[in-house]
Image (cartoon, rainbow, N blue to C red; front, side):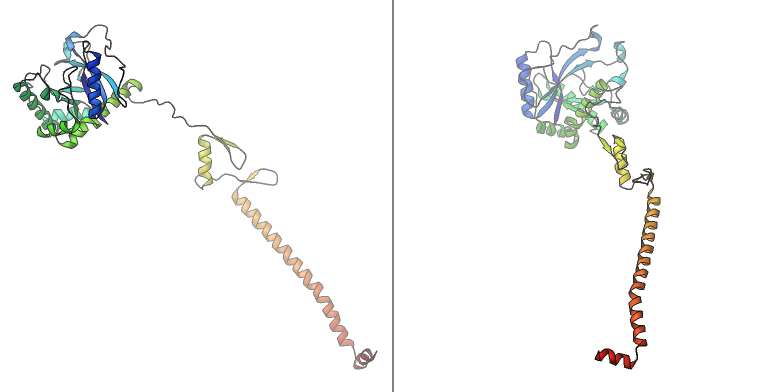
Length: 324
């Protein structure tokens, strides 16, 4: 998803021109747009209100519309209501008057330190492609962009249009913007990050500051787990995390759970159950051996009597038994 976080808006912008600009940006592939209202640091009203309309119709499908306030200042002490630069998250690549170069040289160490703190440098390419810019102003703008790209090594950049309110002549597609930035020394990978990953991080970070607790903890509704009661083999009800613990114990992890009952109904351990089982098998084996010995004695008695009768018979008695 591509972002354009600088779509200029003024109270005098006709709604039809604003909708035309939004529709054109959506057709180019930008689906998250931020309407920007610019103010000077010395002209902040006492009662701050957001004049940007929250909803526009008809809005193109799959388009997210954000609202943004841009304060132009060169010194935080210009207004006592502004905090130091720690609260600032944007720094424009062009001078606020759009006419000259920056009055200082961009050094890599301070620029990379600012990027590591979370500061993002915004490049509004419409100042070089839009109408109404002279040749000298374009040259100064390109020199400023080259200095920032060299100092930051392409990190922490936001690529936006930032043209004239209601004018779409300076807006370009993502491929044309990447080619233009490549001429100015920015690689395609860093340029893609400037239109995708970096602005997405800024939007999520600012949203978390407004929804979360001190910008650290974000409370998400609908993430609760359903409480399901289960019964283990012992008959005790287990709910929530207890059911998960019981499942782990059944798999052999953790402390063993009593699974069998004794004669009086009290649970016994597996070791005691194993001992009782061995004793029962031993008693059964002894009873079967005693039954086998008793059966062998009964079978042996008739054979003994028969053998004794055969020994007591004489030849005469046997002959008489055969004749008789």
